[in-house]
Image (cartoon, rainbow, N blue to C red):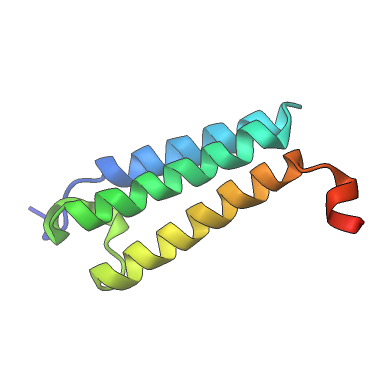
Length: 94
């Protein structure tokens, strides 16, 4: 049996990100799809933080700290980037 097993957490993140991307590509507003992708990246960071290395499967790329920070920052940036679209343009430009 493989030393790294458990592709479940990776598949959850992959399917969630694909659903968010499919929403955006199908014409839904990015305010819905992009934060959805970010939420699944944050879920991946949480899974990587909680699960041991052998159960994290394909989410375990480097050491746990680097993986959690990377997934968390990408997730937070996607959530922020999607929700910033709700801010009126006049507030940003002046």
